[in-house]
Image (cartoon, rainbow, N blue to C red; front, side, top):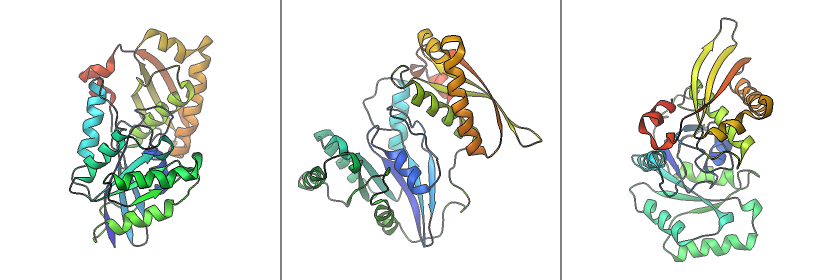
Length: 292
């Protein structure tokens, strides 16, 4: 039996959360086209016959600009410590830059061994793959590199096997029935945030948070959930609500379906939109809006 913790690290939008969700077989991390989608280290657990792979998802790495991004960068740095292996996820579709190489070298120099998942190969010219891999090796990136597509499930099994082989021998470190270390309340908030990001795309910047006011399971098994969607500007609130409330009704319906699928029960969802100007630069509010 092999088991251990794997920190999943890479730049924003490299495909980290998508890859974890595919490998674990459950949705444990939200996915959208926007940077900063992942804000907390979310544990995903893959149980195999002879191995247990415990993934620690991290926020995407990008230039710090406020208190929130500072916190997210620290989360990534902390996740890279005290793990058995680092899975560095690189967006192959974006090519290879000097900053990519520098970042890989930074984590390659740590105590934990590293494997690179070169992602999104289904949407790029195949000849670019070999050239990029050659460039990485020529620049001192001396570790295994796996070109993969999570969306098309290309080489994912090979990557899983390589990760498994790098882990130390030992008993399982997480209960076999656990898929994620996050609470249902946390995951419900993440589902709501994902649907907002997906629906409004470029209309609303990624400065959106979800605050759960009420999360209660009734005697008949249904859930009553009351939450606030936090945005930073009054005009963002108008966009979120939409004409005659149509936008908020649509995104709430979309989110409720996701919550019901996740919880396996009927959900009665009430949503409000609230403005907190520049909340991403206010440590007190950041702490309030992050639940576990």
